[in-house]
Length: 419
Ligand code: ADP
Ligand code: ASP
Ligand code: MG
Image 1: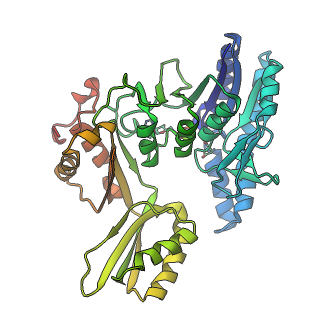
Image 2 (image 1 turned 120 degrees about the vertical axis):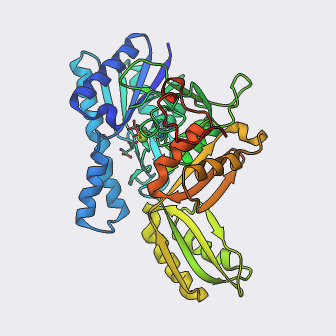
């Protein structure tokens, strides 16, 4: 008998019909002789709707109250799913994050999981019940409700799997697995059978929202193998695990894009030691997650500094920049929210020179201008105009030979060829 954690995302539980379909899948897993824990998200767009409600009341709602609000989404699903399982003749018990022992740090709206005390979940399984856990939420040791950041139900699933020593952690979603690019943008994207934690971390960090970044970090740190698959069919999905010698090291595993960041530029900053430290200390103090940074060549002892940060950190970032501009006597600053980041990820990049050149060539051929560039050993990212994001992703996907055979024939002949 195996212990199986199954996580179902928003679109997998978007309607009552879907909840009943999910209940049947869970019951089938149980009837095959397994113990099952289901982790679920809020139904469909409920989290977005709750965010809209809050925005209609306040432009800066207290983060504690945001968490109180957002945590309700998942609570609806756990109760309905437990009812569905009961109505199909099986025993199930639902748990909020706090009841399931998801203990977090205190940072509201993107709290980190500090510990998993899953005794009640384990007891339910021992009693032969199906345990249902609300994703995306936890509680601090002093019982404050927290949420784990957008997409956080993935992290709940991995944390519960690690906490109860599950044999399998399945992430059910609305696509068949992890693809070489977002299949909604690149119809010829190919499903990856297996992907290493290392690559999945870069894919998740650069916009492949199929897994929350923290869930991959947690899985790697605790050795939890993931199976990302569709809740709408029985096709095998993508296995995410530690790289081993059986894994083919593709030069490029995927192309990602992210339109959820903004670029801030501070102009005519004095070019002397300590200035960058000053700028980025202010941003760190304001809890701004700075991503890419670029500093221009100095002219007359003055320079420009640009950086990108998530849109959701923008209000805090602007406040911090305003302060630092005043302190440093910089000339002006500006914000550009219409940017996108496109990235190429692949473990084989380490040993294959020329990937950056081929990337820049493909973007140039597609008429896409690059604004900033950043690299890691297995990733290259470029900031471009947001309106070019989809063109860029498709061009790179084709240029690096990732298009699947069946769809490649239909790709426009104008697309760049060969890397
Ligand atoms: P869930 O509600 O199940 O958590 P998400 O919307 O969070 O689902 O994630 C699934 C979506 O991620 C897919 O519908 C797809 O559009 C998007 N996506 C982006 N990049 C990728 C990728 N490389 N592979 C698979 N899906 C991707
Ligand atoms: N409901 C939350 C969100 O929409 C968490 C999740 O779906 O993983 O971000
Ligand atoms: Mg998700």
